[in-house]
Image 1 (tube, rainbow, N blue to C red):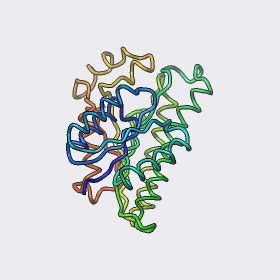
Image 2: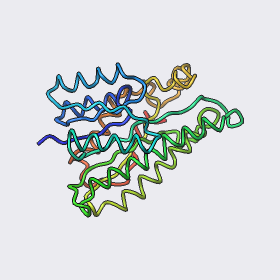
Image 3: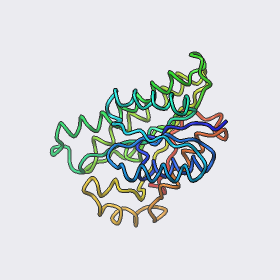
Length: 248
């Protein structure tokens, strides 16, 4: 029987690469998205062309009602998830702290932290062997910003990712005895739309020449790490935050 994975923010970038790689390796996929309807449909079509089931679920991962509804839809259509990838995240506009608007701060915290905690909660409720589940894997999305601080650009974003690192460690220890493995990946400068969306499209060209490995990373390279944590190859890994950074 095929395994089921939920990938949040799966219409573009790392989420898209993860959803497609999972399908190629035999997983049925819930493709969560919010605004990019056409792109999400394209991902679902590609998954089905690979012979796997795809469930499109539109939902805001910063809203508890949408998170609950997503899991309920998966329960009905695909069955309980074997893996959940909490990929959905936002940066807000790049800039210094004194220019940060409270509304932006609250939205970034809601999506990047509160929503991730609630998503993990729903996953644990279904996966925990203590509750009759069959175990599974939860993969969270950190960032190199959590280690270097995001000064002058995304201090607020970096703070949420630092919290994700702590949550990864704590939750992994809490549920390891219930058949659930919790780990995170920590991408560096990756070739996605996130930079331009934050009004910092030039930062890639500025940062890459100074990296020990002087090139931009790809969404596919991050997806490979996520699939590693989803699979049996990582059976003894919990609480890890794996850098995919080119040495940044």
